[in-house]
Image (cartoon, rainbow, N blue to C red; front, side):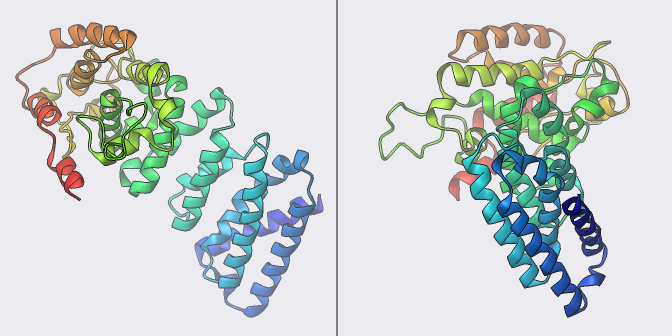
Length: 358
């Protein structure tokens, strides 16, 4: 169609913007681009709600791409279009968003920070109305490089992970890890996710009717920042009772996932990465090298199973106790990495203490 052709032309201009923005060097080019954006804005405004989803692919990623420009007029026009789209999309939950193109744009290192933020906004919006099978495909690649993202993006990404934990495609072997759960192949990403899973298992529901002086208090064992990263934008009702237990059981499903073959070599006998906050040893190196065994080594998950075994929910407690007995039997309990991790669990960490003081 004519509209599709126009947007293909705009796509080529987006690429030019990212590479060098050469076409923005003259006022004439700016004027021509603004005219095309105005035509696109009119077409979107006249589009029926039932046809909006089809129009947004590839229109939405292309529009977001223009946020890379330094031209104030172009950027203002893009923001006007996005503001219009926000009102319509938020008001109609049946409008599907182009999740795959948005995910590729977000993951592209060349994407401008502002464009990346808007991609994540629409991904969060779209994944909330997507089918579980689609979430399982889209979410894992988004978490690649999460440790290098800013705090705000990390919080959103972890919220998306929480919403898809029960549907994550578990690898049948370590060879499948890169394709199914790529964020677990990078030591820094893996450590961050393990730390967050431990926080999730420690999370306790807020009081049913919190007093004014206690409403901001984090659960015992967690800093305010850690509790916020677990709860995200969820309501109090969504992080209590059976709903909270279901999230913890989904975390246990990931932590206890087998990947076939012999156990991963003990982290005390192989190079490992640790986090300053949690001190968790990671076997990501052996996984990336193609070693077989459980998805996580016993040293990585023993603190998680210890916490789960003390949970107030019967199913979580039973799962934690069973897994704790299984991993403790084959774990070097005198490992320095494990001792540091357990001490951090009991005494807290410098990072958490600093956050609480701030």
